[in-house]
Length: 342
Image (cartoon, rainbow, N blue to C red; front, side, top):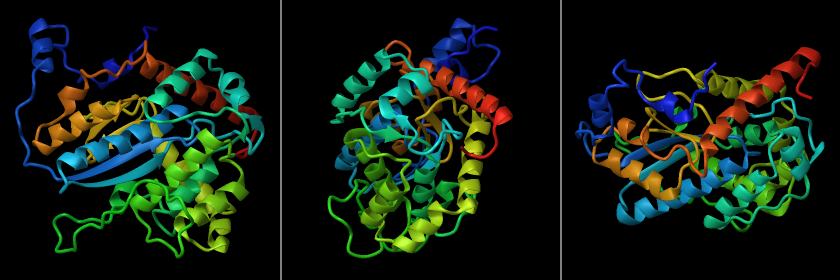
């Protein structure tokens, strides 16, 4: 079977794709079709255990800051959607570097790529400590967005309503606080992203174990101010387990299924802009800013991003897609021989 590349999946499936004239049209800048956009809803599809997702999150934050410095009236609401790469992994059962190199079967050269790309955005990766199943971290991230578990799409839980007569959206920060908050914070996309920043920073740069319930309880309490008994109840909840698994499965159902509006979800991290435009694979901050500019001008960015640098550093996006496919295959094999989450 011929290999399918990430960028092939994201290019519209028209029969004239081999026609040189059609190719020129695909690369041409599209005509503005939409009114100017000041409100951006972003679905960030990720796994907390994924180093590329952590780099992608930092690039997204940087891109938003760059864009808002040019357009102060822009409003961003970012929600995250779980994509659990290893749903059957056990809790705190792996040494971190051994997990990536042996359990996930990644080459040692991948660590060099992560370290180099991380340094570009101020990340110093550490590969000591333990790791394990990421499900509990996703449960608490969702709890920062809504109090009771549902499979409602995260972007439907945004706070700002641009067409409603509501106060100006408060300028919350997406960055994790440096000190514990003194009282419970309002749920919403910003709180979810602050918690994501805190969990992944402590995991990827300070050797905390993102599968350890005690660590998750402490970091969630520090960022959200939620009572400890509520956090513990979420961690111990089988209903929240099922909710996160369903949300992750919904994303996996989008993999390699072509969308008439955009493209499939083929790798993590992936962003879906304004509930329409899939921006997949690893992207740098300047590239993300370019997509925001297209949307602001009312330009459909679809044909723009399908010709962008989806293959980075010698095929990173392709490699991620292959590894995700292999991981799902391994997990399916494990499901045949074991039961439960492990």
